[in-house]
Amino acid sequence: MALLIPDFGPMEKLPESKEAWQEIYCELVTPLHGGGVVARESDEKLPVRVTAIRGQLRFWWRLLAQQKWNLSGKSLREAEFRLWGGIGEKATASLVFLRVQIQNKLQEASLSDYAGPLGYALFTAGATQTGLPEMKLGKEGLRWIVQWRLSEKANETDKQQVLETLRWWVNFGGVGARTRRGCGAFVVKDSSNPVFKQPLSIDEVMQAGCKLVLRPITNHALVAWKEAVQRLRDFRQGKEVGRNPSSDIKKPAGRSRWSEPDEIRRITRTHSDRHKPEHPAGDLFARGVFGMPIIFHFVGGDEPADTTLQPKCKERMASPLIIRPVGDGKGGFQAAALSLPLDKVLNVSVELLEKKQNKGTVHPVTLWEESKARQVKPLNENGGGNPIDAFLNYFTK
Picture 1 (cartoon, rainbow, N blue to C red):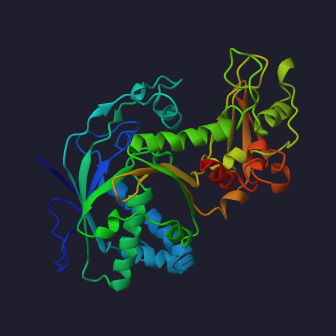
Picture 2: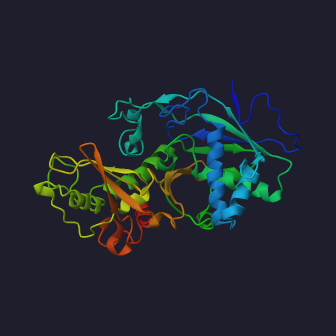
Picture 3: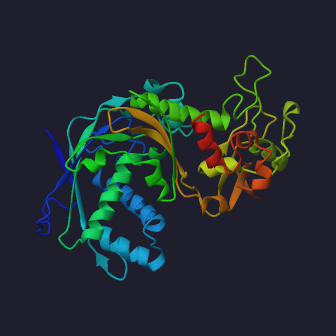
């Protein structure tokens, strides 16, 4: 029996409207990572939450509003509160009503079901050093219907904005956590409006200040996802891409071609005899552009202790890169990499947190500087430029 999940109280009467409910039939194609009320858990009864969908829709609407509809500052906030609801000078109700019908039971999956490169995207599901057990994942195949309609107060502009926002969500959004690394991806199997089954084109994406690259079509979503994850893993730390070949047959790869490890050795004045700092780029923590925090872990007692790269005065920065499988509109799938606008990301101030004997020392470091980046092989060998653009070039090789 289908389970109906509205975003309004069960006894609350919706405003009268001549607008009919429209439907989007969705199917999960990659594992669900969390997404429940309890951290690190999926909710078997409510695996897809209306509040989470509404939050994602607001994110995509804000991106489009800033990049395509030329809204900013006060006009942006007023338009957002008017359409999606919020508390400004006064509380306003959303003009967009949502509800979800769960069509089948969420099946459990384990981390071992996604061995190989996919473990790179799912590493946060593993058991933790603090004693938290391995997460149970939600297996692909879950089906649900998103039902939506507008208030009679909505105008034609509102309708077009909501349609476009929903289209971006069904193409590049997801359910649960780790959606920017492809978890919780879904495809539209059917819809009362055929526009939701049409993939966004590269030109449409560029109109919103983003960049999209795609790999060749495959018949399976997990195969496409694996391709996307493996490209990111190799770019950051794969042999002969992100790392040198190994001189030791017992080790899969040699030293990193990125500058962060050697700069941490310089900062902490700690290194093994085999790993004296030598990278010419020096103070450049370019991989932070992919999202923070990053915990740098060295192997060996004579190497630095764990250090954490994070934005100044903040604990995290969401990745401006989304990788996931996308449907081609004809039953096939493609590995996709989507770059969100980078204008603010490259100028973020960052710091390295070093912990020694329960005391923390903060070191200001550099996230991005183009002149230094020319000496970083994964960037220089993939068209130069910032780390995201270089990765997009590598993605389609």
